[in-house]
Image (cartoon, rainbow, N blue to C red):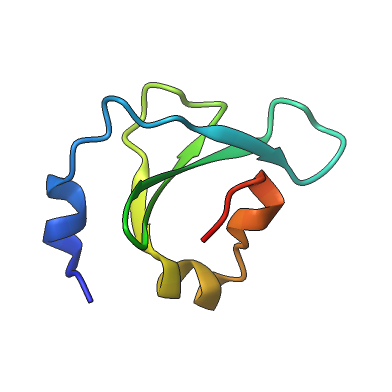
Amino acid sequence: MRNGTDLYALDISGASFVKACGGPCPEGCVTLAQIGDGVWALGDSKRPDAQPLRFTTEELDAAGIDPARFGLNV
């Protein structure tokens, strides 16, 4: 498993983020991109300039975030 420092060392400049909205508010969406093998970047569509948070697949699972909801495969 990677540690948090390793996750933030990954280049995400070419990452392709997809959006998933949790309700009727279209501006309150999260974005997700796979940035490596079992590594993800999670952003906030309301704050596109903010640095996305980085997670492993295991951490996303623990938080109840399913990449399939974003149309992404694990």
